[in-house]
Length: 548
Image (cartoon, rainbow, N blue to C red; front, side, top):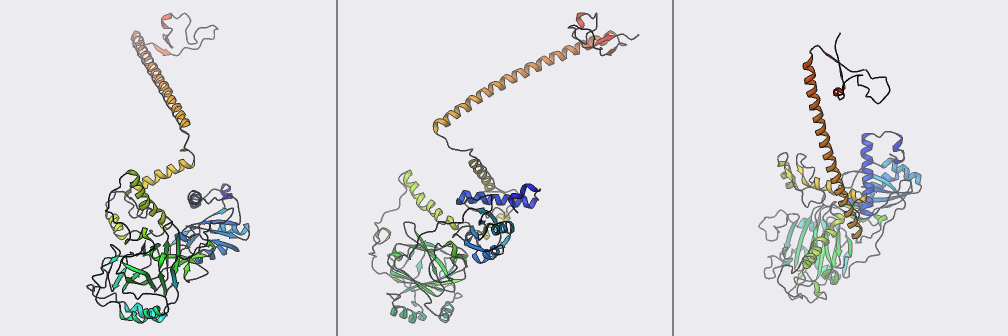
């Protein structure tokens, strides 16, 4: 629907709803992303809801766009719920605007998504500079054959007796097994005095020897952790404990590829693709200083041209798409350290750090710094994927909400994107009222009604406001007194008239009351006054006439 023709005919209910959503998308893009749309046709469009951040890949969006004309470029920023498309001509862009606005497409995860398009002057995105792998990091592709992959996956028996010491019993989001030593997730360490019986499985002997011989690893590992990840699962960003393991951490990815994020303390993040059957080797700085983790989501942002090749996922928004995750099994090998760590990174090394007992913040400033570091910073880090990776309600919460009686009050606190608001329509959600109030405040802000002013100006306006309030109150009081006075006068007059009526009616029961004919004579006499009437009847608007 072309917005230029809205005024030419009456919109249907569906068209009005669509128009509201399109305008909302336009304001959201401007407010949160700084993307400014224009009311006239150009070669470029911004496609709201059509982005990598909400599960729409290049393979789903591009064919729909190409039906409207020759696409000169499709830019899909990572973790954003929108994209930019540039056509060869403005006429082709207008056709896409009319054809695709409000159109429903199916995302990579099978979800139905409605697109909202608006024109922009220029499709552009600030790209990051060229990135390099963290120092000491290496990815070796196709380290084993597909036959060996199948053999290794089948060697892990997940249906063994639950009393097996190699099975981790504490993790609910993934299946885990340990060999050599048990890895304790509560402190990211191992008990060096309690090795597990049997050591590493024999099937790995020849493979590890081969890796040693070819120079991929320098130490023969004595600890192995096997993790099986379902799509949507991940691991928090962390650094393997310095005092627990030697310099080398090695991980083999089987079954499916994955994108692992490496982050430096200064905030630089490098997403690295780990292809299926690849070996990740972390040494030196990448092992001791950079955190590594996997974001819990069902798809990864990858480079369309490279397919599933290993290495850095660049910020080239013209070459990004989505890759659906599969079941991935990782085999992580470590060498248990027997002596304290003396690495070159003492600030993050537990062996070299000075032991201090935990204590409460000594001042409000210290408390604020702690909150900024461990709360605000964490939320800033996960903001880009927060909603897209937390779209599914927890089953137990759903059961709880559905079991509540009609009219119950639920405080939906800390749930972020409101994914529980529609579970039980009979509930009164406190968050809905809060968000309504927040939207009202935001509208006031956009209209400039809450604009901040200089203190002296603000003070003067307050003074004017108070003076106006006082004057208004005085005026109101004066009006109230006047109304009371008039009411009292009216009551007195009605009482007097009633008394006259009572007196006149008793003088003659046969008298008839008629309204006087206005006098045609000139002068200042009242029109209703009969000639020769005594002055006592001046105030009576009627005259008494005896029947003949």
